[in-house]
Length: 345
Ligand code: UT7
Image 1: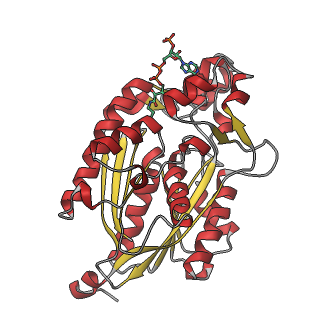
Image 2: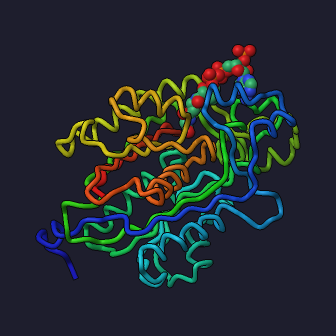
């Protein structure tokens, strides 16, 4: 039945359940220094990372299975049944298959009825993009409960030699999930989301092959070249860093302004865990205290689309998100894409 404007204004979305899953296998900086020319001091000083989780090959964990484990926890905490889920959004840059994406695999593996499943390809800002999509579906009244997952299995696709050290020490595996549910209280929940892109810099943080662009799969197979670096992610670290600090700041300000709020109103900033130095820069810029910015990159590294939902879940589990708090999410990454979400908890 079509909705009228009055209905539309009645609905908002709020996070009702959160969950995360990380593989048990801890890989420390010292572990990495045994297989490539790196060291704990360099990694901690430049990134803040102490350790990350890597799936052990053959133990069964995949991007989808980790997402499913996180989703089960989020659904249970939301106090709903899996059959109450109206739509699935899955953000990842490391899908199990080239296609189909993991959204449908979650529908299958959770045994959810044949609801829609959407795959989001926005890398580090994938969860914020996914949350925004879910929020719009709920605000328009179309759906009541949307499952949003961010999951990554980086470790199997990284260049774990000295050649790849600028990237491979940073990324880790894991998954986080949120259930977004309809509320008729417009004062709480997701107040707004803000999304951006700048494709001009697409190749500054990218995995070029296999693709249907200039690295055709048949050519890659025919070349069979072990020195072909286009199999591995590439990052122009300093260029990405400089853009990240600018875009993080801009999109946080944009979100605050859209809601007539100021930096002093923020109770908790949960940034995408790209680099502890970036989080510290943002913290200083906005005049936030240590307990107003949530960081867990030390334990998990950068888990891309999973980083915000893992961090948000840990913040919630630690009692750091209280009813009425202003919680701001912000992300920046490959694309470039970036975004923020302003939430009244
Ligand atoms: O999540 C998506 C968004 N991503 C980001 O926002 C990441 C942004 N960028 C960064 O976080 C930083 O640029 C990195 C942590 C990736 C790199 O830090 P950096 O301070 O920019 O280092 P660099 O790339 O300029 O490298 C400095 C030196 C180089 O050696 P030379 O040329 O000065 O002799 C690198 O070869 O450090 C060397 N290096 C390493 N040394 C030990 C690069 N990686 C490593 C390593 N261990 N793992």
